[in-house]
Length: 492
Image (cartoon, rainbow, N blue to C red; front, side, top):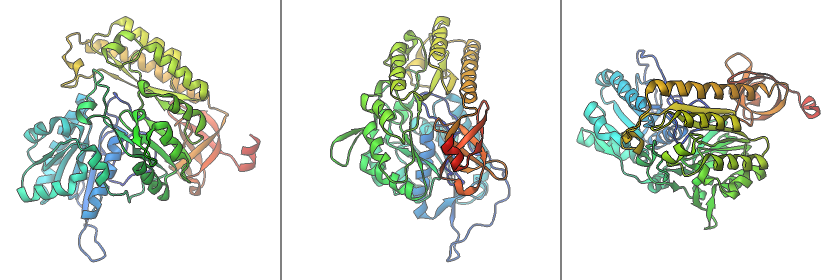
């Protein structure tokens, strides 16, 4: 997932999203330097500059890209700094408390800039806007627009309303179907890899999670629209598609044939598009991994052998308290079924340390599950109470010091597993999709089928291509490799 977005949009670290993890994206830090001269159109009139900062999951990054698409017909072009921008959008995450406070900290920083920039539009989007729109306006009355993740297709209308009323516009209606119907086709290339939202919302109501309240009920896009967007992306140079959804494997959309398609059927159709060389999807829920999707891991060559499958805990008692709807044994049986059809499958997951009511024995069960599965990477966080969720109202909150201690144990085990997985690739020949230049001259960066970052020397002409490399060393967070000539690759 390393495609290059417009310069004004920051992307998350490449890796899976999660149904219940924490914010993983920091807003892009740009120095507050003096504004440059405004760019000019061919006719000599100034264009409008758009700066978007994204926090949270890959779906927020996708939404930010689509906001840019919506605003492009109004003359807005990406701008990589808030300084000199005509419009700033903060696309927010509400998974953890510190993400909300980060928003208000950033708004405080932007307040003076807005006062110094006549006509600047300042907007707050995303899940914090959906959940706490009135609070945003109360604490930051200089914000012009507040809108949730299902409302950004209305941005032109909201901008006009704010201009006419000279006040705040708050738009937080759930209109998922209308949003996808009314969004324009994406005209800005995302890069070699791209995100593609196929499903939104969540009906699972895990005890700790705000997604059902901020993203609404589960909704799947019609397959025809997804396939059309995929073809446009491939036509712009994308070679790897990552399908997104809060519970992406709950996808059940209408197919072009009028029948209901599941995610397995959708993946098969996407694999038939010429130019699609790799497919991924995230975030999945264990309850929605049906037989056809499991079979797709065996049958679809473009579907990469890497799966993010959040479990959150290894304790049946805690899984019940979390309202996960499955047991630890059911999760392990699912892992076994997946590995039976795809023996080289690597897994990632999410873990919460210190959910209300968690006992030392529950924590020990989580460590046992991690040892049993063996993860290539994972995301782990201390429990963070979110207002309005059932867990936040529970009285048996775990002390923060105990949360910290349990999290450190979980992370130490997960880091060791990731380092071992990377080290095991040393001396192997693997296929790498090169996605862009590396940090050093002549260096390329790319990804293995298991989503590991790889760096190798090679010509820029290889960007967008899959080529064999020999892994020289496996590091904790990346791999170093040597590009193989084609005859040597065939012999290997």
